[in-house]
Picture 1 (cartoon, rainbow, N blue to C red):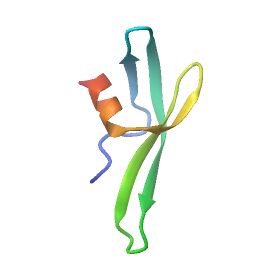
Picture 2: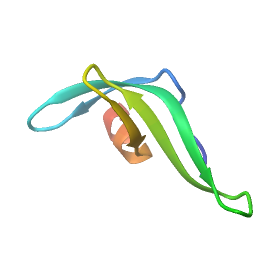
Picture 3: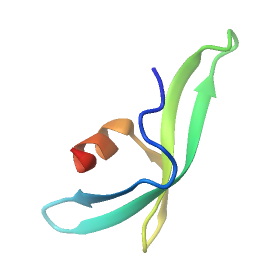
Picture 4: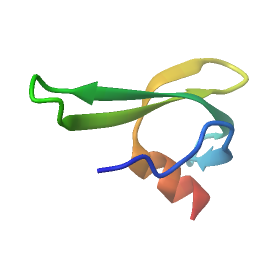
Length: 64
C-alpha cells in the first residue's frame, strides 16, 4: 500500500444529483504497533466542506 495521489491534486466527483470539485490538502496515514501502514485516507476540500476520510478509490474514479 502506498500513496497514489499528491497533495494539490484537483478532481471532480460526479454524482447523479451533483458535481463537486475537490482538492487534496493533506494525507492521513494510520500505522499499527509494528509500524506497518494500515490505512491511507486523503483530506479533501471543496467549496462547501472538508472531507477528512476520502478514499483512494473515490479519487481514482474521478481522475480516470
